[in-house]
Length: 129
Ligand code: FES
Image (cartoon, rainbow, N blue to C red):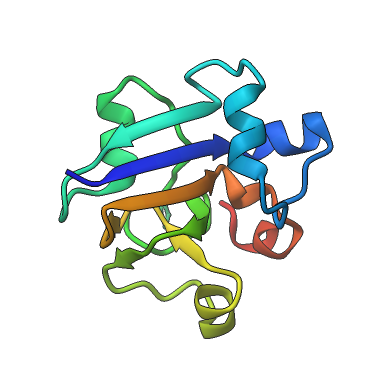
C-alpha cells in the first residue's frame, strides 16, 4: 500500500523552515514532532488522503470535501497524487506549485511526501472558506 509521509505547514513557520528546503522531511523527522505534525500514513490507491488521515484520528483541515475550496490543500514534495475533478486550483498551481486537494486526492506512486495544512499559504487564502 502506498505510504504518504506528511508534515504540517504550521511547523515550517515555527521552525523557520522553507517549503523548498531539500531536506525538509529529514529535518521534520529529526525534530521530535508529534504524530499530528509529522509522520506516515498508509493510503490505498483510490482512497482519499484526507479520509485516511481521519481514519488515523487526525483532524486535518477541510470544508467542502468536493474539490471546490482550498481548505484541504497540500503541497506534494515527492511522488504523485491523482485528483478527481476539481475547479478551484489553476493549472499553474497544480503543475508548477504541486498543490493537491486531499479530499479528492489519492496516491499514484508508492511513496508520496506532502506538506498538509497548506491553506495558510498566501496564494490559497482567497479560496479558503
Ligand atoms: S475540502 Fe474543499 S476542496 Fe477539499
